[in-house]
Length: 99
Image (cartoon, rainbow, N blue to C red; front, top):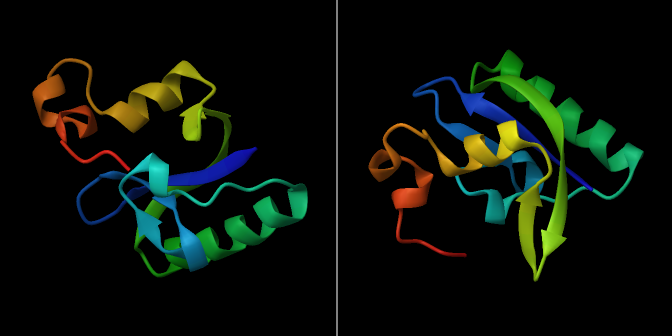
């Protein structure tokens, strides 16, 4: 399983591709892709967002599901999903929203 991630150009926020190619700020709202064709289509939508200067550095990342939650596989992606490790009070982990 994969999701497409990028950084929003306006403010540098880590975002994930949600339904219909929209960009969402929470990994829990990301569109989970099951096969290579879905990933290729999602990356095409991401390329349009890059061309439109909405996001930069879009790529597909591996995820798993644990009790219905989307969980990044790599440590780098776990950190990106949570926010900065030096000031956790400012990162995504400080938000009270749980979806």
